[in-house]
Length: 411
Image (tube, rainbow, N blue to C red; front, side, top):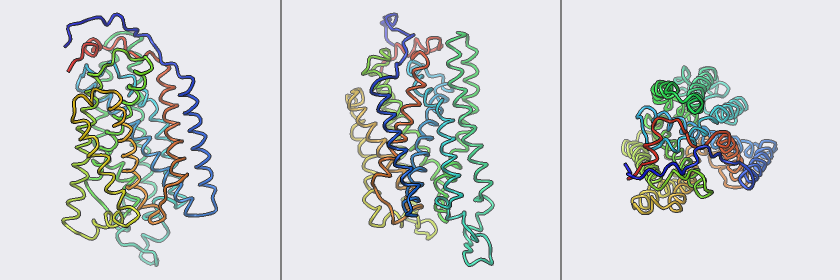
């Protein structure tokens, strides 16, 4: 704890003003994305349509995961009764508030891809479960009690719906706290967070099995859910950190200093190693056991068109953060930390790309205007919604019971 207490200089009622370049750039990115996606979907080339759906799924899933990570961040802070993070809590709250929109968008993409047979055709196609059909697939038929359209869609709605409701309520309680000033909202947040973490912990692996793993219905891995969770959490932490750094540079959040950034940097460092641990454990066990129904996943990713990206993925998401963030001075340097965050966000885009593409477009993968357009569109949409939400409330949770602790946070 610091001994100084000049926090009375801080303007706790300051609000972020969402105008000018940030607003213009996010709207331009949305327009570019919409145009690129429209061209792709309206193309007469079936491969182009399929590639567009694959990119929509990739970015829709990424967008939803980052917003869900905002809700998860809030829940973890409440359940652990953390004080250090209370000064920066508005950023993950804005992300959590946007989760219902992200979830709805992902649901539309999933439904469109499923019923147009551009996604999930490995298990949702004519005759796969009918023993009389020439298309009969014994493996898919064996999984039909889980992989069927009604069950699949019900799970998507229930999982994403519960994450959205909990995240939205956590943000709402905190905004209410500033109005009434009592501990009621904080106590509600604590109870809801405990419930949310149980729901989230048990269902996110199944959600990733459904949304991403079932693109290749023959394959399975019990570690895939945790691998996806690690990617989601690291990406969410990077986005929170980047927004804080950008706001800091524009003169906002003066009470958030290098000590808070150091803590966020340590979390990114630690969970990048956790992501690598799960990635390696999944890869190593499958490679060593050499069982055909497991190796099929990595066999595809060792084809010439994917293999370089397969290894670059590890370099970006493990080697870079470890070598840079192991240095205390680098973690406390805003520009260096922002660089690592941008690098990791690009790295996890590549990670999702390697998860999605071989099970959808297979050898027809590409990197062109569809990929760039879809990525720009979703980044623009995320920025617009989150920054817009951020501008609606004061940037400091002035009535948070642990705000004082955050102001004196030193490590």
